[in-house]
Image 1 (cartoon, rainbow, N blue to C red):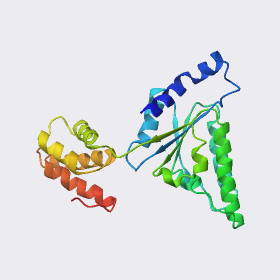
Image 2 (image 1 turned 30 degrees about the horizontal axis):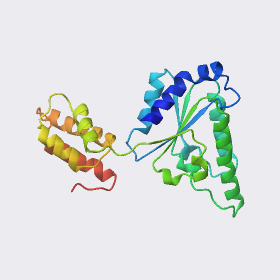
Image 3 (image 1 turned 180 degrees about the vertical axis):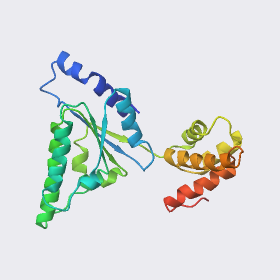
Image 4 (image 1 turned 120 degrees about the horizontal axis):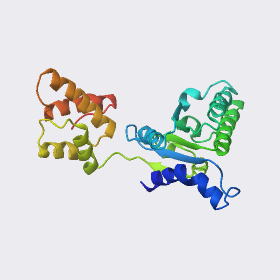
Length: 237
């Protein structure tokens, strides 16, 4: 993805570019990205890989846990996070961004007014932060349009297509398995699932096959898939 490549380039070269091209007063010191897509499509994994590639700690914050129903508490919770992260070269990863960046409410009560103030506070704090901030959401449509314009990058993480799913089945399966190429192609074409669902299905199938001292079969994978999809209230066709 070109957007992720730009984030990599920002981490690697931004400080030198600002200095050498005399851009300090034209661009802000930090960078803000929104990762959106269904659960299990690699948003958290990508943030983790960025941290590993550049030897930076990734500090994950679940915004649904930070946001408080008590007036003023959310700002206090967020301020502690930003003070802790200041000048530490961390990547801040805010999960469940919808909790604070959802559609803004009309101001019909004191609570609505403070909720909007909390959002404005976080936006300003992100603007002032001199590092990389990534916010994650399952659905871009949940994020207020006014906020979307404030991000430097917006990265979509879709459910893998059949070709990508086939690749994932192959790389996650143990080298020695009992499935044919045709069976793998069929399961990749038929079931629209995420990478995490594929990985979990293989894990459970491997446990059960190993316990029976045999290789993983197509039936093992479909049975595991059934269990995974039930978590999402989905059924196999």
